[in-house]
Length: 174
Image (cartoon, rainbow, N blue to C red; front, side, top):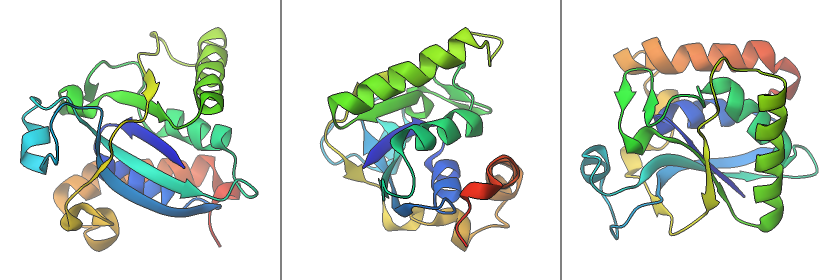
């Protein structure tokens, strides 16, 4: 299992749903102080939760490192508590690790990207242990797949999916 946050969870879910080796993607919340948060509470920025996705994957097909390499391409890890027009700590860039090996891989990937100066600014992605996971409301699950022409999806989510499909064509599900 891998858990990441990088802005709106609709974007991340839409991309990872198309990736070879990904069994399932679930949108939800973690990293906050409130039990059973709602979308409205998380959007207030007062709960401390991030919009995130929990990815179940087959490590014989796709590695945790590969999942993170995609993660760092489909969002901007240099903006603190922001992704485009989405502003607030709920949109922060974060990797929530489930095992110490995942923490090490995340730190290694970020160090390599920093060394290669992939981004013009410093990477602000937080790496922290996965805490209590709260599944988002049912209407958030598979949101892009069900609403591709909704305004936000067409303007924000679709370009990220196109970018993924272009840069990672070999990683697409058949």
